[in-house]
Amino acid sequence: MPIDELLRDIAVIDADSHVVEPYDLWTSRVSVKKWGDKVPHVVWDDELGSDVWTASGQYLGSPGKTATAGFDKPWPDHPKRWSEINPELWRAEDRLGLMTRYGIYGAILYPNISLFGNSHLSSAAEVDPQLGLELVRAYNDFLIDYCSADPHRYIPVMGVPFWDLDASIREMERAGAAGHRGVIFTQQPELYGCPSLGDRHWDKLWALAQEMQLPINFHIGSGATENKLLPPEAGTRANAASHPALQFLGNARAIAPIIGGGVCHRFPDLKIVSVESGVGWIPFLLQALDLMWKESAVVTEHPEYDLLPSEYFKRQMYACFWFEHGDALDTAISALGDDHILYETDFPHPAGMNPGPASSMVTATEFISQNLSGLPEPSLRRILHDNAASLYKID
Image (cartoon, rainbow, N blue to C red; front, side, top):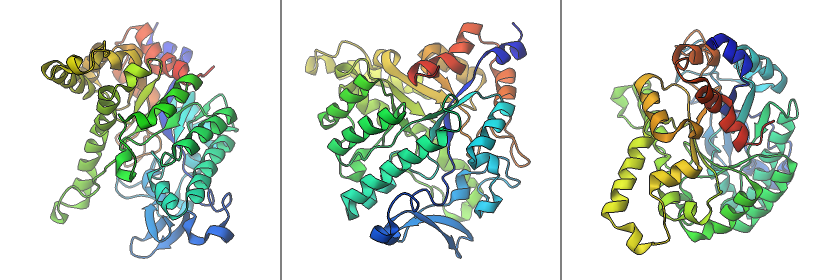
């Protein structure tokens, strides 16, 4: 079947797409009278010349920095005010039309202001645990409301107050009952005073996720990040082009401890997703883990570990890609298997599948036609739809 006909027949699922949070997300749902400026809100910053998210005087991010799809200037330039952000990026109903034009049926929705592991909200929890919990619940409730525009096409995944294990369990049960299909988790909880991912402290959470069939999603940027990688004389654009690549690779911080800590062994039906990370580097990581697994004689210490790291990955882990093509992608598909790769657009982030006057990117339909048409039809269906549909229980 020609690729254009095939794409009309496949309901493409975007495995990593981002909401643009409204400025009143938290102030309309969490008591400002009680918590004051500790509730995340937006103010104008004269020094930066843009709107910024802030809480307790802490800078949380600029709304427009990650809402650049279709913007007329190259990254790191971005919309400075809400009025400069295209409504198709933030209004749920309008966005559905844009998705259709770009060739996307459904979208797994993630945050858009560095809440990929709720790390910013953990600071609020240090002020008051109840505040941190209320902020997480408010985001999860907002996302359910947003998805109500079309629950078949919008798929919500929840944040959890990971700094409180019992509260996380309760929130998984509450948000799962409301319709969330997965859990967003930080790749480095130890940065926030919690045990590392491989610690048995988290087993209660993994067990519930396995029981509820909620995939655990590790989005890049949910651990240590270095946004100022280069010296000032290198320039802002060279820096903006350099540090994202390290963030893509950063999900190795999740894959290695999850496998090495025995999480995959103890919870064989738990599903793990590496989000916005790309896939080309993962075969190298798995070969390196397999090598050191053997050379370090891990099985003498853990005879119960009956698989190699690469085999644990192929049993229960997944990764998303969007810009990779050619040999890099072909090798990853061959090494990992087409049943463990998901397609995403990273909408509406810089360098996502978002064409515009200042971007070289193309729509999903164009990218797939140009770069994936050589895949066998069953592989294409698995990567574009079936894998995500199975993971996130999409009809």
